[in-house]
Length: 354
Image (tube, rainbow, N blue to C red; front, side, top):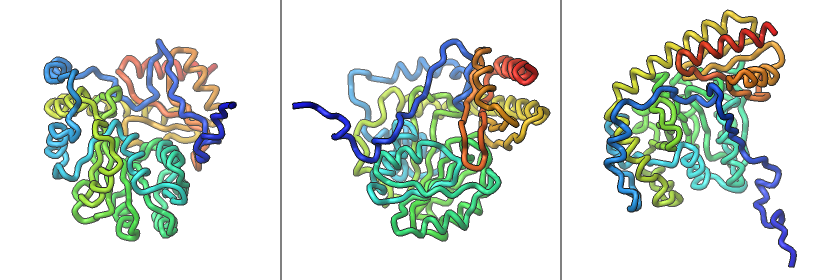
């Protein structure tokens, strides 16, 4: 009997291409919104001393959740830890989405919202940002009125545009819909803008956070979710019991003991971002987006893909975003170490003049 894998595949993913995160050895890496600085001295040794590699991790991640509680001011029962924010996004879709449902997003935004919706059989309702950087609050509220809608997802600051949305506008969405409103605060440490204080007021509010950006732990996949107990209780039904490994749990908990050192790194990253912003604003580009995060989106007048390729040929990797709704063809750069940023400036000057 012939085996036909295509006939067994879930219908929702038949036309999907896998998400590709390519590796480019030997380049200056300014493409992934990472913290380029090394961990504070002593952190790695403390983590290794605490982890018992032959035992399963704490299925409730209690030590990490306790530290997150102290950091955010949110009670432990209202905190869930995940294998990166990506897993938590999928858990949300599994618990509240599915075939025949819709999730509302303000576009352009983080790709994983659409991908996870598709994986779980749902549909995306896109509400484009006004002028590429302003929430269409009325459009989001209207889209959420669809009886099939389950989640309204707002990334704040937004990836890839980098700007923050006024919290009053997000509150307006929360107040005008009975659907879950997921606010992704992955870049909170750079913007300082948060709705954590509103969790008690809005039972439909869910907040996502990560250790991948400001805390330099992208390789460990540590994300967390903040929500009211009724929402957490539903999510627990689909969360895998050992979804966060022991090393990551220890690293996240100890990172918060080194908070002043990481905050100093954030200040350096923001200073380098501002230098890059000043440089880009001085070029003949179609648009440079304002940023409250650790990256800058910019649109050349033409040839974004060619510029990306020529920078890569000079061993400088930025992110080619392709064609984005409203924004068009753009590039995104994350500040690296000071000397790496100088290399980017030198390379981009050469490309634009060449």
